[in-house]
Length: 377
Length: 82
Image (tube, rainbow over all chains, first blue to last red; front, side, top):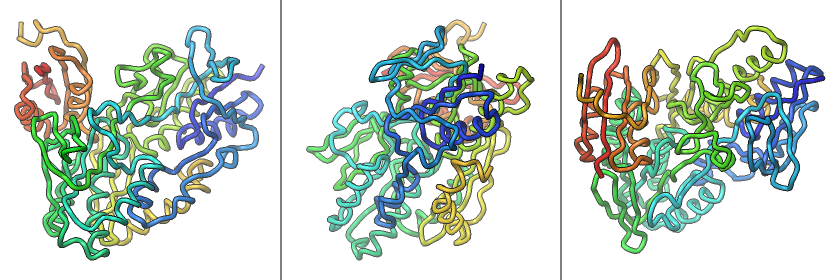
């Protein structure tokens, strides 16, 4: 009897893992992807949509078109996982039994975690990016604050990229002189990684972008237009853009498979659930203190697929995840740099250049025909 | 017996080898979700943590119960005070 493999989530990690498993195991397994929407969203594109640099249409594709023929797609919300009986309950009734389960359930935005969050802007969802684009089109100048309302959050470079690109956007619109742009950084520097922060700071200085350090957003007062930090400071704004708080998926929490943030406790090398060895997790879903990004999921998926294939065949797993992440960082002015690192090698970002900017664009454009299919590793 | 050994740790964060988002961010995230009185242990091999973690704990007015050098890493013990 073929092994039953169920993949929860049709994002980068789930799609790639399912395709690799089907390709590797063929008739030795059935591979089923369960996804609540059946749409695959390319989330790095939100940034460009919010800043009016890209059309929203290129961000979404039908998940079916990205999966190999042999992979079954079930468009349903998974409501509960029973790790003892090895079943997944579906919203419209019925259960899916599994021999191996891949949790690629990503993260969800939890705006209610911040008192007063209200209709504060963000570029972390499709709707948020479109709404912010409209707000920016109407914006005539004023104090703009960009902050982080929860840790961990997806794509650590995004707030820095956003302020640098926003500064350029305001100049292009001719409203830079009557606007101020300030990044409320959770750390005592602009960016999480010190080497990248050193590279970004001179650009902040040159473009007169403000930086408030150790400002972890705790609450918002939309009536008074103020935002307050965990560290006890308050700042006034005309336009506030926040990275919303993130949590693990609801199904992880209702199944009791996550920590207090809903993240899956996973071994940092094998990516197996710390309590249930037939459950593997990848991407945003894990509790690993590394970047929550498509790139992380992209590099973890082959490890998950290869290890499950070994289990199915009863052979010793040959691969392990070494913490590999690679991401681009837009620095404004049509320039970008790149960050490549793993558990043992911190990143050494190259000087921002047009080359990396175009590399990021090429990657964005080629994503649909490369990453989900495992064509680039 | 050190102070930290007498304190019951609520959550331990092994952030050794982590460059991004970094041990401090993991600590801030844990404190945000924790309760007043919770104690967090962070193991960090990132040299920047030696100054970053105490600086943040001081600014946010939590309590740094211990910062102990071990082989290749530092162990911080932080109590959430408010």
